[in-house]
Length: 391
Image (tube, rainbow, N blue to C red; front, side, top):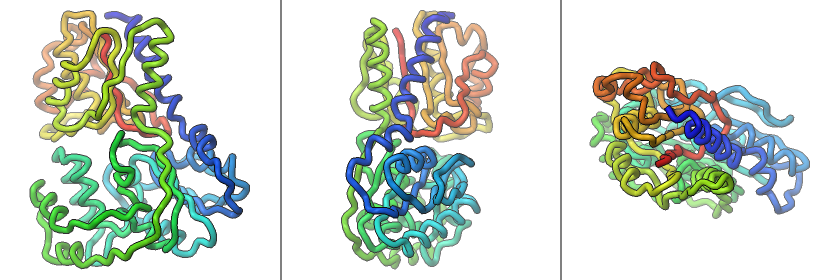
């Protein structure tokens, strides 16, 4: 085991997370004066820290913060905890409250959005039940549906997403984003509550059917008939994404005299083919990529995108001096109870035949036994996943 390389990769991941620390980013991003009071509506995994950063700059804030767990928020901000990755009772309570505040808030509204917001904050359109949203979300997430498909469906079932928050407010909303979808349309983050997007009911219905969801006629009619009035344009500020973290890690590596590069584009698509493509593109030294591949889970084990990728890497790296890390920047990788893993050429010799673990989708169980899991707890930010190969 190359302890030195493993430790250095772990240090680079710490640098990457520090580069997308939400409180600091937010305090540096608000440059225009805003007349007090300002209503903040923050939704997502980074929302408490984003609120704290905004409050450093703004004279007086009030509003609501929808988070994944209890955290500190500024005075005047109501904290609500939603559910993730499937909307639950907390998510629906938060959705009702967020729409209420948006409709009643006087003066300027500032939205602070980050990854995870789609599940954490929800309110169905008329004619769609909470239970249907839960079941549809669960099926899409576990079936390996793409992020684009999941967000398409979410926007059409929700009174918040796809500009629903802006429709409730009936005014422009300044929006600051920490994006978990590098290079994508900002409306994808938290399914775009402040950014109206064109409706495509037939595409949303087809996406559900394609993934085995039985769509009642009443839901089809609700999706087709949902009113989508126009709203004023929203100012959008993307303050960080996965490439922000990846570039910071690469710069730190180069400052230590290590060759390092960041791949263009986004890790997207079925995880096995994405992993193969990543390995083919990786150059000498340290190669970093960011994104969120799709995993269709067919087993009953514990794991996530990153532990699954790490297990694929362990198989490929066996007997070499190469090291690979796969890391969820929010600190939570699926059901793995970890943020991902760092594997090397000796992982398979420590853990034995890994084919059964891959079949059962029990990557975290295998990597826990080999001592390769990365356990950070919630990081308070979310800019998708980072993959790092040192060869």
